[in-house]
Every structure is written in structure tokens, then in C-alpha cells.
View 1 (cartoon, rainbow, N blue to C red):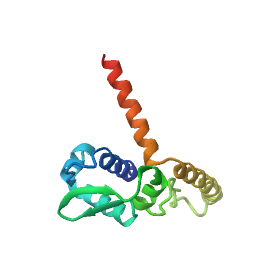
View 2: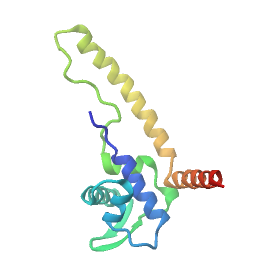
View 3: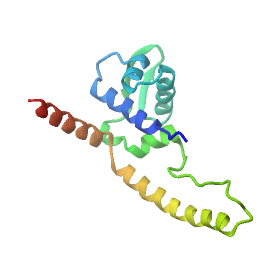
Length: 147
């Protein structure tokens, strides 16, 4: 089973744009950083535009954040690229004639909803600014270790 990396890649794009606001950032350049294809980057950028997080004009390689980094949360990015898709998924193909098969999924649904709510609350607290600050701290540590 493949897990979605859309949120991770979307935050990567937003961070790259925030870090290099005055550079030409084509989908090819962003795709190179993510190690993916430019069509996928364009798809994510379109979702980020529709989500109100990114401003860009087709044919012009200068995308910009639609809001300041402290006003963009992980939940905003998640909603832009994943919509209302849940973080955890139940197995909907269990045996309906089995008491465990039916009831365990009902029990898990309740727990998964609670986990979703908690995760969304935390994602609402983490901003792109927080991500960029952590990025700079890790970069600084890495550079100091090389000395």
C-alpha cells in the first residue's frame, strides 16, 4: 500500500517558495528538489492556489505565498491537497458475517475519529513559520557539525 506524501510535498513547495521568494521557481526546479515529476508539482501547486495558500500565474516562474508563513498552518496545507480525506483508514472489506469483522471496525471508527480530531487540532497550531524556523535550526546544526 502506498501512503500519500501530498502534504509533505506541498509543505516542501511552500517552504521552497518562502525561502527563495525572488527566484524563478519553475515546476521543473521544484520537482528536482522533491525528486518527482513536474506534472505532480503543478497539480499540487494548483491545489495550493485553490486552497488560498499560493499565488502564481501560468507561464511565470515566480509563485508566491498568498499569506505570511505564520498565517499558513499544516491543516491549511492538508485541506488544500487532501481535502477532507481522513488520516487513518479502516478496512471496509472485513467479513460482515463475522461479529469481530463488523464490530471491530465500528470500534476503530470511533477511535480514528478521535485521533483525527486531535491531529487536526495539532496541525492547526503548526505554521509554515514554525516549519521554516525548524529548518533553519537543523541547517545551522548541520553546518556547525561540519566545522
